[in-house]
Amino acid sequence: MEPAGTLQGGFRVAALYRFAPIENREAVRDRLLSACEAGEVRGTLLVAHEGLNGTIAGPAAGVDEVLSVIRACRASPIWT
Image (cartoon, rainbow, N blue to C red; front, side):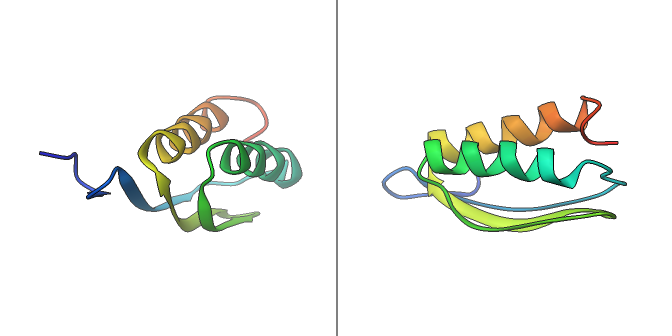
């Protein structure tokens, strides 16, 4: 059985949001764009002053990597 959010063939969809101030939106955007391109992930991620919102889809490994980057960004000074 595939994990939740994983479609047949290893394609995964993730809908997400995080309402928290993002002071350095450009740095967060650049890290997310790089991770999405590397993992062949497509979708929309809105990086705004008040937080992050979006839906992404792609190979399971690529989506997992983008989610890891989001978690890392939350723990780093570029988020706030």
